[in-house]
Every structure is written in structure tokens, then in C-alpha cells.
Amino acid sequence: MAWTTPKSWTIGEQPTAATMNTHLRDNLLALNTDNDWQPLLLLSGWVSYSSGYGPARIKMQGGRVFMAGLITGGTFTPGTAVANIPAGYRPPVVGTDVLIIKVVPCFGKWMRIDLNGSTGNVTLNERDATATNGWLSLHTDWVL
Image 1 (cartoon, rainbow, N blue to C red):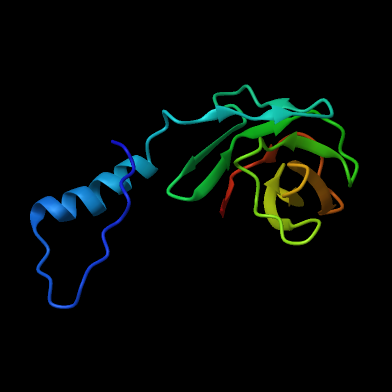
Image 2 (cartoon, rainbow, N blue to C red):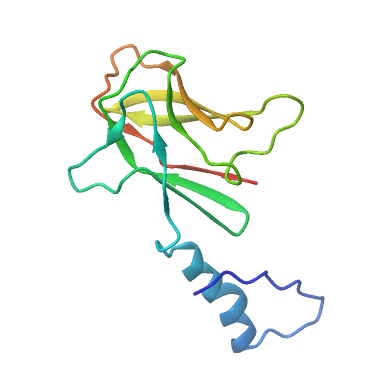
């Protein structure tokens, strides 16, 4: 299914099965389709975790960007860029820089990653003191 611009409903308009299917069911299916994923460029020695988890990847649907994957083994120093988001998928920039800050699972602990709209870098930041580079989840999303 392909994404369709959602319908603007008017007061008193009666929805039909056809319009509900087009503007609700089909768009929900489009959001859950995995055929639009693109590989994500990993940096600083990080690689996709190979034990049956999907590779580091990114997709955009319906004005929302989805980043996913489990990565492992790279440089684990705060301030290190672990991946780069391609142009067109980056968070909007206001002024000189925009950081979207997400807290993600990291080898059973937590890690803060920053998404930089100017450079596209996904950067490690604060973390649980006992976290290691065994694995880091990149599962997050943002609106363009």
C-alpha cells in the first residue's frame, strides 16, 4: 500500500467504507510496511548487531522519520557520532542547529543520543555509568 494524503473531514459528512479504507486502513498498512527502509550509515566502528535483529536502517512515511536497528561494538565515548542521517531525513533546523534528544536502551541500561539536524550525526551523550557497547538501540522517530 502507498501512503495517501489523509482526508479532511467536514462536519456532518458521512464516512463510507471506501473512504475509511483509503484514508485509514491503507495508510496504517503503509506505515507498517517494511519495503521503504534504507540502510543507515554507521560510524566510529559501530556495526549492526547480527543475532537476528534488523540492520541499522531509516525510512520516512507520512511526514515522520523512523530509525531502527540494534548496533554494537563501536567507540563508546560520549560525544562520539555512531551514525549519520541522510539529507532529507534529518530533523528540521531552526537557527544554526537543532538537537532532538532521545533516551534509548543500551545493553540493558540507558543512553542519551542526540540527533543533529545540521550535520545528520547521531551522537552518544549521557549514559548510565554501567552501560557498555554490547548493543545500542536506534529505535526512535521524529516528525519533519
